[in-house]
Length: 283
Image 1 (cartoon, rainbow, N blue to C red):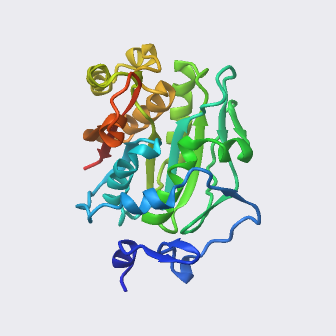
Image 2: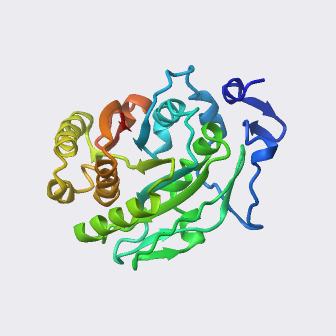
């Protein structure tokens, strides 16, 4: 069975959902201790598996949600790069718990998933705000929610995860983007910004807010991005670093899909969460 065919054939065994994994010659050496994926819903993962999507070429970055209500949108994004020849996946996301300290948290351990272990990668990345804390990383759903999708669609690809506190300044994000660009030079990488958009607004108000946010993204208005609150998106810091890196490698972005928790759950209340997915491609 080809690697492509295998990836699109989820099999349910007593052990659970089994993915393709890397070929024996590609098996990595893992640390003994692995992070556990605490944000994975096997039933939802299977239910939202899409039909085989058209492959996209030249994708170097994606903006994806981490709210599992939007599982179908996460599938849709990953499925388009399922045969990408990436040696490294870098996931940027917000630290939902650390709000008062300027810090960027990363980890050194592998991840245990239903599709096998995901190996960590090391980058020559030096920045005074970066701290290694696998326990914090393991408890952060902006990363943990995407790891199973990475294992399923990009088996054998090593992962670097960085979560950013809301206390980072615009200067911090500019410096971090520069450090990452330098560390990633010459590598075949895919960069993910794990971001949910409007929070706590009624459905129609959320749609209007998303239009405003889209204009800011399209204009690369970093000050405007930083002026946005939680009603617009959960991490201007993550998106700022991501967009600077995409600009640095000359990747052009396009909106792929939009969604809202109301459209999935079907309960129109006073508080919804909205989602937008983007692809960034180089010629």
